Amino acid sequence: MDVKLILPALIEANDPGYRPIKYALFPPLGLATLAAYLRPNDHVVLEDEHVMPLHLDDRPDLVVMTVYVTSARRAYEIADGYRQRGSYVALGGLHVTSLPDEAAAHADSIFLGPGEDTWPRFLADFRRGRPKSRYQSVKRSLIGTPPPRRDLIDRRRYLCPNSLVVSRGCPHHCDFCYKDAFYTTGRSFYTQAVDAALAEIESLPGRHLYFLDDHLLGDPRFAAGLFEGMRGMGRVFQGASTVGAILRGNLIERAAEAGMRSVFVGFESVNAGSLASHRKRQDTRDYDEAIRRVHSLGIMVNGSFVFGLDDDGPDVFDRTVDWAVAHGIETATFHIMTPYPGTAVRARLEAAGRIVDSDWDHYDTRHVVYRPARLTEEQLVAGYRRAYRRFYEWGSIWRAATNQHSPYRTLRHLAYAGGWKKLEPMWDAIIRAHRVSAMLPLLESTLDAFGAARQAARRRGRPRPLAQKPSPSPPDE
Image (cartoon, rainbow, N blue to C red; front, side):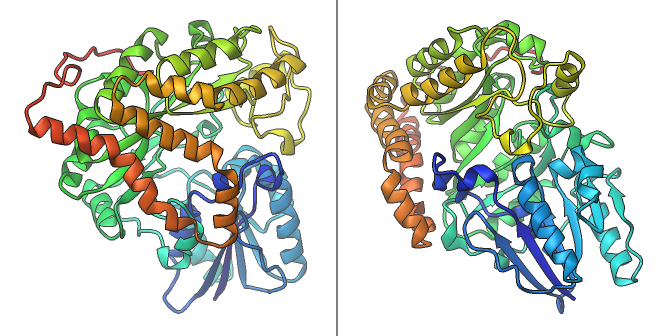
């Protein structure tokens, strides 16, 4: 069987205002995992349009694509072309699950939800010549699933080729989360077996890892076993957590000992009222302690913030940036609140007549597609752009670096934040030369700079003022 796996480019990846390096970070692991279910004698090709041109003049037996909201138009165009030439087309992903009838018009089979249970069933049906038009995920487990076919991935094209996913979903349910609808018909959060995750890690070359899990610390028992198994491996890694998980117990300390050097945290808003109205169950009063604790362990913070929530007024942009800089957050991502199809916030805004734009190309978190409550569209767009500009200007980077209260952390902050945003011509040249992975040693050394120094200090017996402090036990976010 001749199989082609395609990740169509997000529309923003081809926009001159966006940064190419953002789309050369991670290989398409979902498609590589689907390839692992194929037979050894099947011929399979994987193409990622973010880092390579697609070859669309062939005629494989089966074409499979993952579809996101801002790649939907491109995916449907590709799908229609292949179907006209006689290939069988299967579509899955977040957008397909959210709008199955829309996707079904461009596919022979569609997949709703995760594919661990549906993809093997489809393959068996397809080989018998009786594939169904729709497959709905219900029974979900990562136990016994094969590791991704990394031989299909050109490591040179990605800054983080050692990305991996050891869980699915998230235990929390924020009403603006695009992924929540993906898991509605079954378990919304589940993990690999610890031994399987460690075996995959052992198989990866180099030191750096990037966990793409929505919440790496979401299952405390699994995370504790994972970090214990990783101790002594010499890895440095990045992953995501929540404020509550950082403050609860000692998991974040165990993560640091295993090699965590950067954590993505969805703060979302500095307005407590905005968090409550969108089912984001965390307390802004805990933010300061979470950042202090993470920084004390030699872990950098990538904070995520959403603008345009119903309690946000015109002052929210500058207040957010000032807060982030004052707390020494190393990197930040800002978003305009986007009511994705299938989310609770979209249903609420549709019922109120506040959706003004359903062109999926605009659902990239930088366009306003609804009527904000306390801001005009112009204020929201201008404030969003100003927040990015202010946070990453050299003055803000310097102030945030000096707020780190340590020479090691100050230097690392300058290198990491400055290198990420201020060396655009260099990144573009490296991407064009297909040598992004050549920057991995620099990334590893930057991530580990303060972490290694801190571990050495611990071995010399210096005190750890925050790590030994009793931790509060806030409720789940």
